[in-house]
Length: 558
Image (cartoon, rainbow, N blue to C red; front, side, top):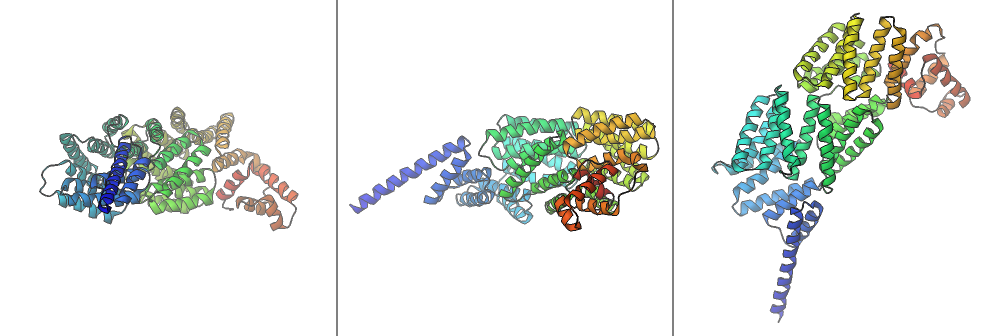
């Protein structure tokens, strides 16, 4: 009787477990990742899952943002396949463990898992897994400056993918070829291959893990090639894809960052800041990845552009912890703070290390500005000429806009105002065509300086008024201060300088101190402080505390 009861219980348990597994497999097929994860996890708690189901559980964990757990389940699946003698499937698990570890910067673990995968495939003959194992080294070669060698490996991987009909490997290899060709200077060919990879993604031909990675890679390549319009198009596609996959977590942070970058470029700075903060929060919840550095850097740039220098400094330092390649933002922060020597040292470090064309163009843009600030016209000319060569090779409108502005600024410094006007008009037209109001406004400030040089005071006033309106709308306090300082320069020739008390008040305003606290610190009434602030604004031609703060930094008073 007892034996019969036990047998019945086992049978019932077996049916229950079978039903759970059937539901989990159905959820996996429907790409219901949260339900797949919870159902398979419940089944695993009753009895250890087989390797195939562990592999599905690992995928569901990865896609729902549980990367650590996903790695643990995939390692168990690897052992399960080994135990069953399914060497190639075990090797594929080892590949993905190594590939993800490499992406996360965990190079020792990556090396170990990838070496294991290679060892397992020794003597196995030609197989698709060997194609996957070509990818990590190919990526390393492209990033390390040997794009031609990396391209050959991606081509070899694509051949294996085609032989075995593996769409994931085919699309990854296609994407890799495109990125390598771009680094080799073959922009048109590279972009065409990237678009083809995206067609495969949008047609649903690849797995979700691969799809999300391809989206982010292609948008990153748009940043490399300064292809703003293509970046807009693919960012919109990524946003729609994330919305159609509500359970997917890993790519939401990257999606928000890409959206924030588009918003910042098109002039929606408050919205860009909100999206970037959301991206930062999303990425901090998952296992830390290098992309956090990109979000921190983007936030730092927004803080700098808005005149929030202490927040910018902090965010730049956070970005440096995650990014191996230096960027020019901190150098530009030093410049706007009036520390020309510090800005020069910082941008020189960037110039010494950055070689990839897209990153170097951005560094050169900053270098020209800093070189002109220290009156080194020869260095600025050399940098502007190098930018022009890069722009001619790439042909991107955004890059041409940057190059024309840099050349125009140098011509102006060389005393060639009419030639400068032609280049700056080209730049302004390009920025306007792309739809980047901040950069267009910066170019108009230079056009105002050209007008002044040509004794066209009315033309200068028009350019400055238009630029001021844009800077006010965006909240670009340092640029607004420059415009107001420039506008007030002639007006203030006969004015009294700031009094000693007004200088004290200006320094405290620049430190972020309120009128009430200034009154307490200086032992005067709050009404008197307000009068001093008003006098400062009138004398300096400023109209906001943010502009006064930026002015104080530029004059070395803060």
